[in-house]
Image (cartoon, rainbow, N blue to C red; front, side):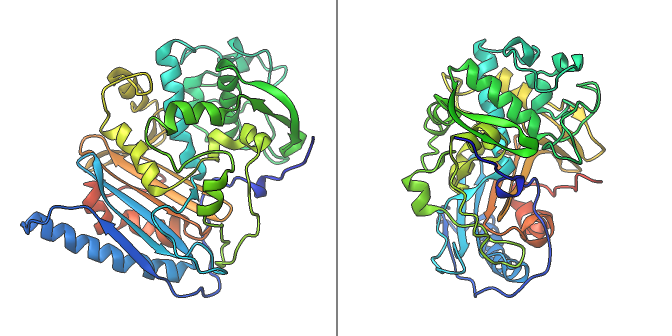
Length: 403
């Protein structure tokens, strides 16, 4: 089976911002887990939460974003979670804490964690050329392909394009390891290598994607591996990469920049999983993603699934400096601020925008997921992450990566 799938149908790298039409009024609900004592600290947190619950619906209305969920981590534990708005402006079914969203590029840190565990187990080497593990040369006639390693994929230093196109062809732009350039193609390449290393083999179900690149479903799939080695062990039971009954019942459809349903009705199959899954294909809830974040900032002891302290330190160590505000580690951006360093990652697929941030030092963090393409880095998310309320929970104010 062969089919052509356009980039717009699946993956866009960042949130957009544009004015649009008015949406339906928002409803909101929130749940909080906190001590009943009335200490000054508790009173302050209650005030901050009340302020957050006032801010979010107003921002959503202004940006024409139908639904949002948020989870806040404090002291390494889930502290509070809230659900706002509707899954769809058509059905007006309310968002709740079980609502599933597309995680978009925040899928990347989850895959990076799995890769680090494979390296820890000796299945692959973080610094070995990926060409050691596959005979497929994704960039023919360029010996620099042999310089691309898992480390360079996870730190976006491969020199590969984000996603190949007529304007950004599939070439290596610079000597791998010498510069930073965000690359979904790098993650797709590493996913192919990892899937083979854990036993996956191509099937006859294939599709044509950007620039007619042919990609085939793998069996067993990377979804099988991630479910067995990350999602289930970490308690992320509402998450997955392939369409299933749970996701079908709980998915919030995406909405465009005007707050209208995109109508894409994306249902990931084996081919799209093989092409985009680890770069941007995770479907999850804010609560589930917070469980993953807690494994990073407040890790349990190492075991068959969890990283050793040494591997986790290596994952979170800056690999390349972009500018004064930003470095990249393995799977995560490191935001350098006056209040210390924070890990973070954003993402946007057509109809969705999301953002996650955390502090290893403070064991704090938050996850924001929306079903609005207009929520991105100006509509809803940017005012929240730059505002005083979420910054108080995180323990510091994030800086723009462009500073």
